[in-house]
Length: 204
Image 1: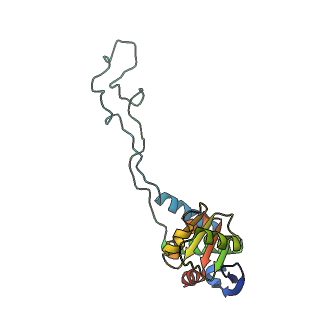
Image 2 (image 1 turned 180 degrees about the vertical axis):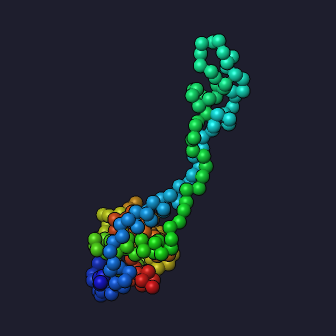
Image 3 (image 1 turned 180 degrees about the horizontal axis):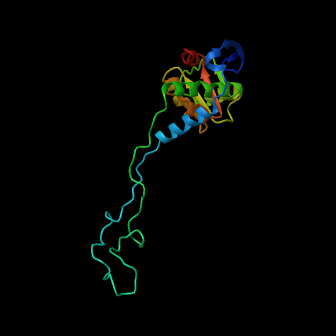
């Protein structure tokens, strides 16, 4: 499996051989689904909280006597059946995060990348160089590579402040180093722009 490498002008300059074991296998859709659910669960704050009838203020006195009123028995005006009462089985603060096995996470990562390669949604550039932060220059590069109209994820080999500043004002562009990349980030983006160096680290 080969993938073309372009320069910043959008010209194809060479091709890179990809590891068949990592990128040539089947797309594991079920595993990708499990990975996405895990990553989304781990993002949940889990701060939703409701009060039970014992936590709502008031309701200490019995509203009326138990018998001979003709009405249903009632012990508190803070019963979940009453307006202003507590909530039965409502949400309480909790931790939603969990982890799938490391091997499964790794397989999901390479499966997500392989799906982008097969759909021609992954573009590799030899390098991203800016003398100074320039949003206009970033737009020119994205247009030359044919990804300026898409929701794009730019992946670099390290935290590059100049590249980040050049793309942070473009609404459809997000920038991160390859160490932050995972299956969820890959799948939620239309196009991925990888530097050659970052792809080399990912293969290793």
